[in-house]
Image (cartoon, rainbow, N blue to C red):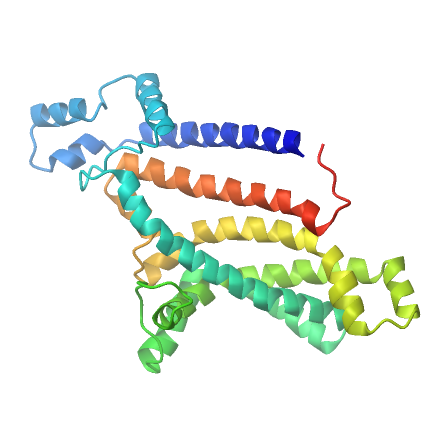
Length: 313
């Protein structure tokens, strides 16, 4: 297993290296000039040139990228063009907000989606199974920004039960729960449907296994057969879905944060794109990519705890 972990960590490093190069190169070839944005609309060509030199944008591409990689090794993400503050400090303030939203969303997806998947598997080909399966197709298709707007209109504007936006506390606190419920629900709807569909498929495969039929023939109670014998063996695809979904929710939070005016990493990234703040864009994308890769690495390592039959080569 140690060898497997070492190989996966090496792959993580290569993935992040490739991601950093793609992001850096993509921003390098964009037509907009960040030096002009920093200098201001009224700046002269000489002033823009001075700003470009001070930011190191006058150097060749490979030199700029080399400096960027060297700084990354010391966790120096650079300085924001807009605020002239260290980017790592600004991300440290906003990242917990995005993680808070994504965690609330994944909990809703797990607590709702997996039970619904089990239920539809047990009620296969019944009206309930058909209803929930059809509903899941609609849930996957609904854009989270539209759903978020509708939820805000109904529960915040019309009924005035919940706040219209903002997030200042963690979701397990009373105030944080009220702030998180609408954006987390909007963000998690398609993920709920995905968990339900994958859970249904996995449970159907396991419930048709010989050992499940043997357990039923021995008179083991239905609940024990489903939740002890079947569910554990259906967890591998659900764990895979968890890793993919959590990483996807971190990225999907970008739009949801805009709808609900949440000052998280997504809002930080959108503002940086609009103002051509290249170091912020590079650093934010790299942080999100790193979290996505590490989450999936952790899921891979958890496989052996759920299913001892999994072997690491």
